[in-house]
Image 1 (cartoon, rainbow over the protein chains, first blue to last red):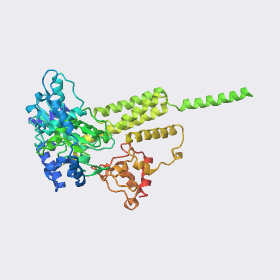
Image 2: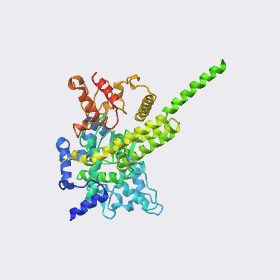
Image 3: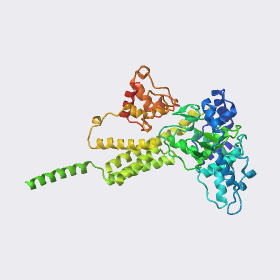
Image 4: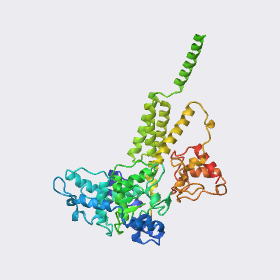
Length: 280
Length: 104
Length: 119
């Protein structure tokens, strides 16, 4: 019975092809296999070090990074985000009022599956929903202002393990499955999936760039990228990856972006939040 | 003498004109090619798999048409259609192929 | 930025070739494009993103270094097949299917193979 409902839900949401009997969604088994793949492939990398992305793969880069961290380039964003969180809206409320514990130390709980709306709610989406609910203008998902807010929230959550939950709800499992499918689906004229780089080739070089492992890759978000000379949100990271393989990026917080963030964050469960990060 | 030269020039020009007219694409040809390309790209959009190169080719086609260069415009539009169709084929194949890469 | 410009140039070149074909010029009479240029061009072969090649700046390493090509690929057809669509042979390869996805045409692939055989 449950299985019938589940299959129906997948059809309704249109997230995946009809599920075959041997193709049941099992997030816990996926999680175990995913983590094992990386720890076996990189036996010398400490589990909690994967969240440091390319630095966990390359000693030379790590030294440069340690120098960068002496004057963290994301510090300004964290300060800016802290101020924005405290600043009252026109109605007198603040961003902090929308979140548990005023938004401090809770980044590890996002995205979550909202059983009321039946959708994945990411941190970026929750922030804009808060602004709109209070009569304020939403922010661009790729803006420096948005990155500042998530940078502040990540900073106050550093060290806390990702704790993404998949409730026993067929819609949540369908969203997870859709995110998994997005992650492994090749796209763009260059025919790359997220996994082509971040599962099959972590530590490899694309030109001079060192590819980060997918395990823990979102724990470091948002990131200051030296190549951009500013901050990048998760939305910006996804959109850039799309256009780099010559795919037209999806709109910010498209349901597929939210689902893939859900899937990937779940894969990072148990690993500490390290954001905001600094990357070459 | 002068008249004969003018006549000769007129003949040459009209022949050249006819030849060009026979070979050149028209605004209507371009519109037809563009409609096909845009329909294919819309389908790719429904599959959430448009390519940036399709978009670039469509832009180039419209720009060429705006400049009255319809041969070039049709060529770009045809290229855009071919790219859009390749992106559709990719998305269709990936509907089942993606599972092969999953970490197990 | 650089990528964009090369795209525009290539688009212009491509349209020029198509135009030439429309006007009835045979493709063979066009000057042979430089295979190395195609291989290094980010909008075309873009080979350096993943392969080390002699005289190529800042190469990546997802794929094998491209050297001794004649010895390693005595069969020209095999090399053409790899560039055209390596996923046919290896479903998980990250090598883009250059022909299937219309990144390179037959003539351009031939020219790149000519260049690869000089390595």
